[in-house]
Length: 115
Length: 114
Image (spheres, rainbow over the protein chains, first blue to last red):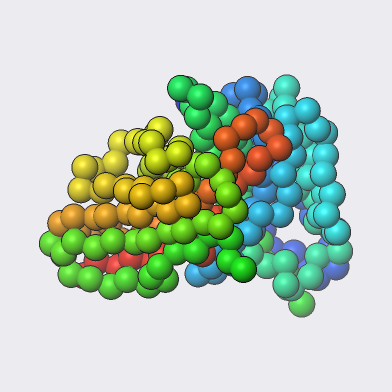
């Protein structure tokens, strides 16, 4: 059974710092990995999707890497801003049998960027 | 244009009542999902529907019944609501296929059972 772990559970940094969020998964037979952002009381916004054949994806100040064989992904945020404060969720897509797919989430990292 | 829309956004109801949450997607995806986010913010799959057919049914009480009239809609009916059903319920959609297809989530329905 796929399990996704995110470390740290919470992180507080001063504005302007670069930071790294970590995600690990137990079964490397994944199709892709998605990083989401969730603001308090809001839904999930997809930030980056990395296919299993890719090593990294970039969007603006965000860079996500994937090491499928070791079951790890990192989300790098450059020059953090107070507006980056949110919970960041990592999720992996894998086969769940009978031709279907399932997205399994980690418990998230709650990021606070202090002005 | 909202890609995945859920209604209502908030739902407060008494124990024992029956309620429904509606979900619609305009992305042309062939698979829709219901996820539950508990008080500890952990997201867990409940149901998956592909082309109106139930694919995944995790260990969810049978008081919960998903209904998909067509591949753009997936509704969640909950009978005899209990206090422990209080959570945020998210609808999502995706296209069947491997790596290039991600998931799109709705904004959630916060259910409070009193």
